[in-house]
Length: 209
Image (cartoon, rainbow, N blue to C red; front, side):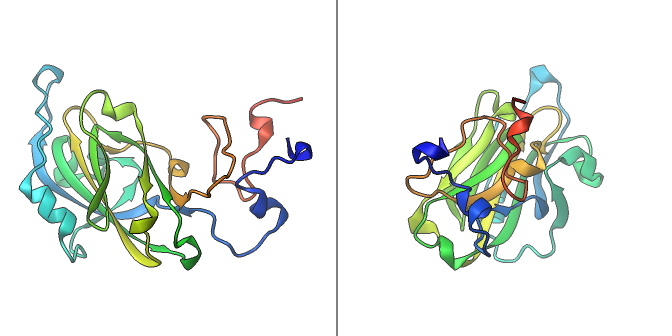
């Protein structure tokens, strides 16, 4: 493909190594609060997904330093304490630094899978949601419009509602990232393409020729 003039989004990282930031991992430490804990339910008695006033207030709270620090991704029942064996509603928050080179670009925010439902916000503005059906097995990839992108500190807020079983961010570490959507770039086609290698993915993972 390259011999025919094809270009790929990761070409710069491979052929023109520089300090340019191509992607930012958002896995790791997040602030979190269980705003509406509910007792673990049986499948046939699952609570309804209701967006509470407490969750809306938590999304816009200026200071969350007193909230618990948790590792994302991870099943929230493993956090222990009031999170253990709880269903219900929680809010997760993370502050990230957006490089000035990304200004003017749409961004792709990937959160992996979330169990069960989510409402996702960027600086307090909603950018995506899955609020019904089999939300637990759907990957969240949301667009942050260029008009909402500003260099420096930005806040990601995710309201999560778990109505049965485990809850929280249940994807893999490499599925949690944010990166610019480069206009005209050719995307990699394989659904399992990974972005956590230094120089892009290893094609030998797919086919040894």
